[in-house]
Image (cartoon, rainbow over all chains, first blue to last red; front, top):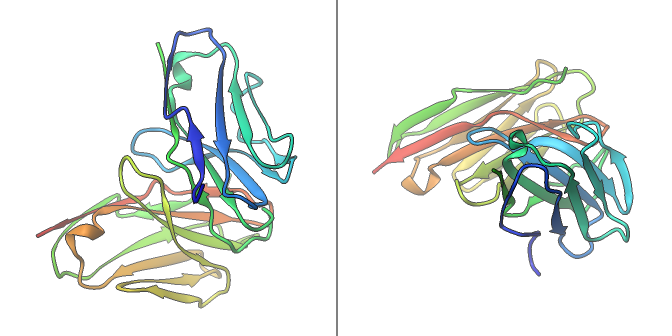
Length: 117
Length: 111
């Protein structure tokens, strides 16, 4: 597709369940980023990849959160044993340049709105 | 701790007014400063990426300047229109690559 695609758009699940959020970046984009965005706030960095390599996961809140990008394209953000505080918009972005020393913009997807009951 | 501050938090102007807002960021280990336009229920849209001290960029009625020595960037909108209503986000990156976003300035332009 032309833009960054995220699925599902909305996810409602019960506390304690695992969820997997998918990001399909713009074709050919090298770097991929995951952010979490609370209502009325700017995006908060979680992790990023250059190709399939996870370069920085310092923003992941705890070890229930993990991300992978095994073939350097589609990425999955997984949250295990979800808690109510995990409820937020999760956004993915991709860029044509390698992350780190990049002056290229990031292109954002529409996000997945996660609600934990 | 890397902190990006934006001011004002919100701004209400009349159609035709010109306006500007500020983004403050750490001046050490600076690599790039990004500006994004974000309409609620949509994804943030890239406006500018600036890397050099003194950079000025322009897109239509919107322009931005960068001062890396003192750690600030200004975004200007000339002759605001109702369709400019959105939240304007700035984000700082160092050589590490991740973007640190400010909380945004919410602009409302009344016809």
